[in-house]
Length: 320
Image 1 (cartoon, helix red, strand yellow):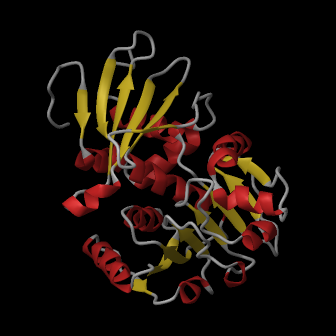
Image 2 (cartoon, helix red, strand yellow):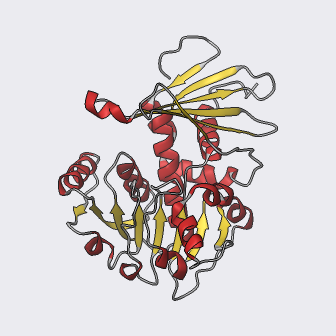
């Protein structure tokens, strides 16, 4: 626990979150608590401070638990100042009286819950046994995704690709510093062909993943592009795959990876078979031979609430 300014509010920084939320534990918690009833309105976006800067708000709550909201600022011009363009904090409030309980590093929270839900989808949908992972993308999320898969025994080999070779080498070096050895690929096709698990975590507006590269037995996690004008996988892959989502409602509002194929007429509006809440309640999934699986995530506030609640559990008398 860091920087305790008041006795009744706790502050959790990135290092503390890493200690409190190891990936194996977080994955089990997400699967357990996703079956609960969490109210989670769509995220709101506001233009602030001119120049294309944004403020995002992502609230979530349950009837008998805490209230949480993630606050995110996006300042694209920060790159010219050698500063991160995205900053985030998460705030938890008591559900019975609205009292503030905790302020949490929102960036680390987002990385960890996103990587955990990606690894959970791999555990649910990929073929049994550790496989070969092709990681497309070299941003801040990529090392977390790789670590989540390695820590939970889901992969035996990892190859990473980025649009810039230097970025891929830097990501591989960062993972090596964490004790995880990966190789790099100069071409996305080379990385994907023969992979059992493919993860895309990019900001692509046009597809970087071709359907013909993906084996019938493969599982694909689309974790990056999160708006209707963005698309990581070409529509032909969505047409031939079984499709799942973190939140059916959120994906159908925001995910170009699904909305574009629907608009093009290559898949039906009901192409998503199930989302994580439905799967957690059902606890049953059977792979169909001859068809890859695709899991689409756009970032869902319910995951932040579950992860942050777990982080403070035992540190507060109760959410009261």
